[in-house]
Image (spheres, rainbow, N blue to C red):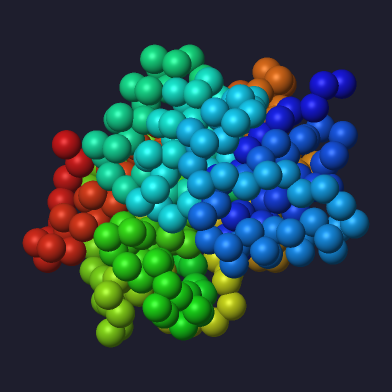
Length: 332
């Protein structure tokens, strides 16, 4: 079986997480090169390879253009750079003829999302956003159960996400609004938003939001509530000045309740008359990269296309509008 070649654009902490996953998938994946300008990150990748017993490290380049000029395009590009850089790197990779898997959030705003969608359509390449919830077998199973009426009509969805995000992002690009595009809700909290919208099965109709920066340059805590266009209510709480990194998503139906997490790690079901949840079998866990490869092979429908990135951008635009005006806003 021919291996899929990939370039990794951005080799910071989460980029190296993806690289580690790829190194364990040597039967399917060949890393062709890296795009990284920071020597500190380059050194960390070299150490990652050494620790994995790999003697040869793929070459580093300053730009996607430099890489393509030196060795040609790979099959795919995985983009794990600061949020502001996503749109430029997506467009460059698509133009070079590569399929793209980009870390969340896809881009900073609706305008950039539409630009990316036009480029994808023009080039005919595959583009997926690396929301693990959308790629999760647990979330997919939950959607199937909801569609089959297992919990009856959905009434409301509640979710929370908490992390010691503020403390570990002090002085880093994630707290620079020009680079990050937002704070905890826009970053880690985006997983929660995306999974809730996936499970609701409709776009947001209206919402009201309040936020607090808690002394930081970006929002740290958020509360958002509203309704989707199918009448389902929702309530979200994001606490970026807390502990750990955990989340919970609860889908409440007339005949049952489903419980999962923002990244879809597990799935539980509460049935009528049985207050304790029972585990729902969902199949083996797979990394986002593994499932992306299945999408490329046509064995799995793309669960997180660029339209999901556009959907998230529009949701956040409504949140910002509500916070700025101090009132409920409706989607246009």
